[in-house]
Amino acid sequence: MLLTVELERALSREPLPACGTDARGEIVFLNAAWDEHATPHDAPRAQRRWLLGTSWFSAIAAEARPFYERLFHAALALEPHARAALLHLSECNTPTQVRRS
Image 1 (cartoon, helix red, strand yellow):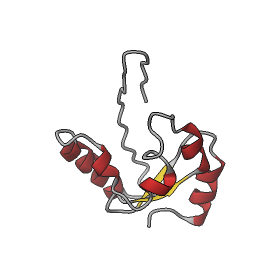
Image 2 (cartoon, one colour; image 1 turned 90 degrees about the horizontal axis):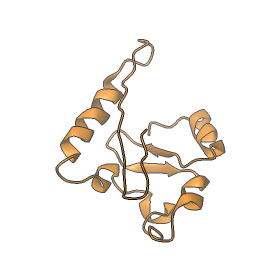
Image 3 (spheres, rainbow, N blue to C red; image 1 turned 60 degrees about the horizontal axis):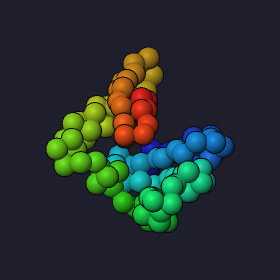
Image 4 (cartoon, rainbow, N blue to C red; image 1 turned 180 degrees about the vertical axis):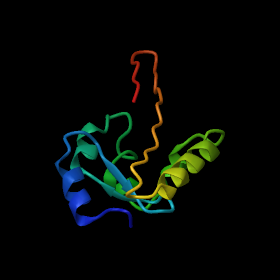
């Protein structure tokens, strides 16, 4: 598991949804905000009880999955104290919302 006790506590305090995975990409942690932000359209399949233990990669479209799997494993390969980072910008747009993270 990639989560330390300290990281899990910090993610639990986050007001926005936060997710933690293991090294295979299995979802092992979702904070309480995850359920609070699940829309009625998404619920219940977007709630913690349904997602814990599933693969994060299974939620990604098949054609994009290899890219995100490589990105995920590249991030895990970074040396913890090397002062290196991996930054990925993405957009998640709908007809009514433009969102960039």
